[in-house]
Image (tube, rainbow, N blue to C red):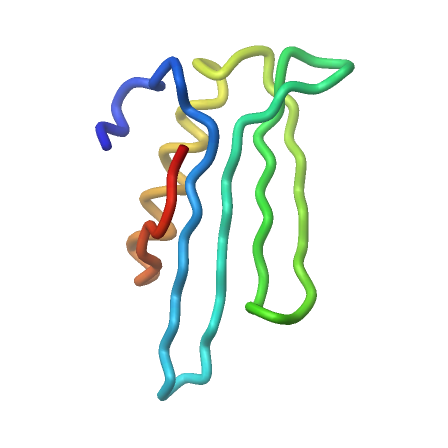
Length: 88
């Protein structure tokens, strides 16, 4: 996936990080979703698998405006040893 330009069909990316030695079983999902108030929002859902999850919604006027934030988040997750398991 090329992260320099926002793809027209971007919907979401799901990340997974499993490290048995550190007892880490985590997930992270970042998505672009339409909202009733704004043109759209970046929705981040993350937490420990099988436990609580946290959801943070950040409104943006367009996917192109949100793309630098999405791209930085993807790079950070990959740097922290997450792997992409699904995208759409």
